[in-house]
Length: 168
Image (cartoon, helix red, strand yellow):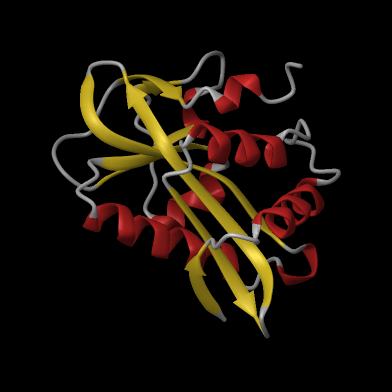
């Protein structure tokens, strides 16, 4: 498997993969591919990586800027992350996240946050201490990994694409 930056021409493959990866998932509202599209259009797709096997894209991860009220950052949000269903549970998602986090560290990011299952992301270094919030989402799902400085506290504010997807 090879991990590389998204390149021009990958967009439709990434969107189809994202739709397929989230199809029927109980935690999905079906807007994930649209979120990636809107992040890209707004210039908020800070880091977009794909995983390839035999020259075929089998995974994708997006990172976008986010703010945490009371923290100067820079902070990034992880997601959406998509893996071709027949390739799931093989470490592709974990490898994409690890590569993305390493690149964010190199860029001087303070850290990365996400909304997700703690059982999935704890092994990648993410944790929830109850000091971050995101709307009505239970605190255990609001997680972060700190690269520089103290752990933040406050409300997460994602790029506008997360609120705009599916609204019209």
